[in-house]
Image (cartoon, rainbow, N blue to C red; front, side, top):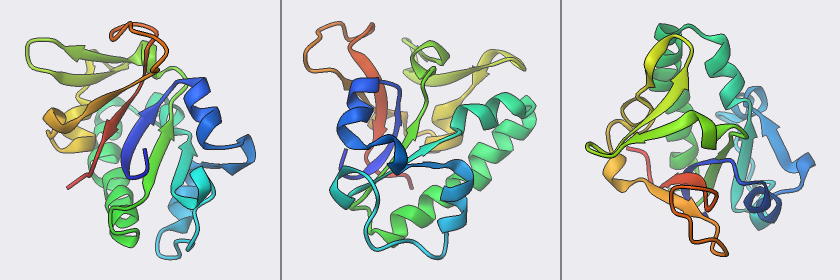
Length: 160
């Protein structure tokens, strides 16, 4: 996870990347736009870990959450990638992600469980602009349960 954009919920994986004081709030992340630091706080200067993703989605109505993901957050992600020329990792810490993200096996589309929708937010379309084929699961290498506890996050190499 030295580049790209990830949703991470595995605590052990997070502990390898960042100390708690190195994790930024979503508000702090937004404030960095336009004044990005030369060295990032996590993963030996190669990553930025951001918390608050879940809280924003939970507080917004379904329509507002869709707009926020597709426009506001997507623009921040693109600005981050442009600043670091795709060579830094942006990691959203989503502690309940394993219980909130589902994948439709037939279409390989990812959804975020949201109170305003039975199916959920189509996170693949909204966050990754439909490039779900490039999304990879982050797996705990010590565990072979691909759909269970070994699944500790999702990684996309580059948002376009």
